[in-house]
Length: 180
Image (tube, rainbow, N blue to C red; front, side, top):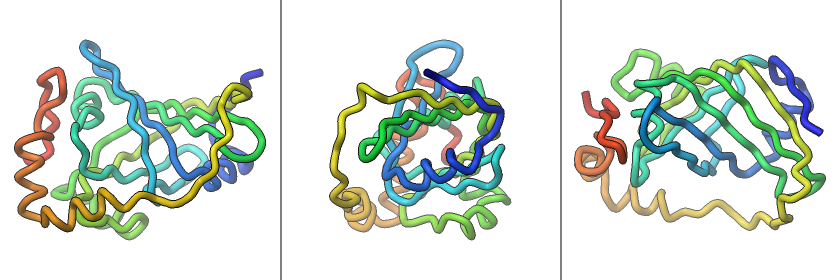
């Protein structure tokens, strides 16, 4: 049932563009594995072998900490509408913070809203599709606006204070380097 590819094909790219959300998985050598859902328009395919996604402020910052130890990342999309399918991308990733030189170039691709925390550039080494027969059907209604409102209420200074309080260390106590 599963098929593997060394890069994204046109059908993969089309499938990704149709999805409203994806999941990101990362892990360090020790500690917890993290899987996070991502929504909004925060991902761009740069080439069949590379993509970038924008990470927004959240309650944790596991991915940033994990990539400092192991630069592995997995992204997964599930078809919740239409024909069943699952698509996974495996690769290595690097973190781009607002202080980094590449930030402004990536901001031209995906505009960073208030609360934007990092871009992740993913170099793809494996693409895998599978059936998705057990994934239920769901109907998309709209993107939630709760995070946007939370960021607006906090403001830039409040978000930076939140990063200091909640985003400088992972759940396992590893540094994230968000404010260095």
